[in-house]
Image (tube, rainbow, N blue to C red; front, side, top):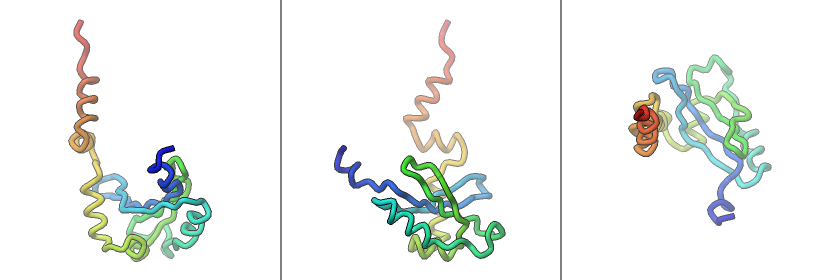
Length: 127
């Protein structure tokens, strides 16, 4: 295993924003831990929004397994996100939106290699 793989955190928590304006999810940030014990402790320390699903902020802490698949989520407050990520929520959302493709056109524009593959597969073969 390469050194970068050995030091790569395996146990992660991501903070996401359900962006109703753009009809998508925006990753605002997150963190990873080398051990499951650390990860579980950090997860327990994240408070659920007292308003639950009624919280208008549509912010979530996503508990991710070692493959990056979401296995649990907590609805969190804007204050919790700002405390965890150390930046104002408005900045995090603006930065996250700028990095998130919401349409196929935006995705292809952000990834020229994918766009080239997409175009080559979309062209009918000559008879």
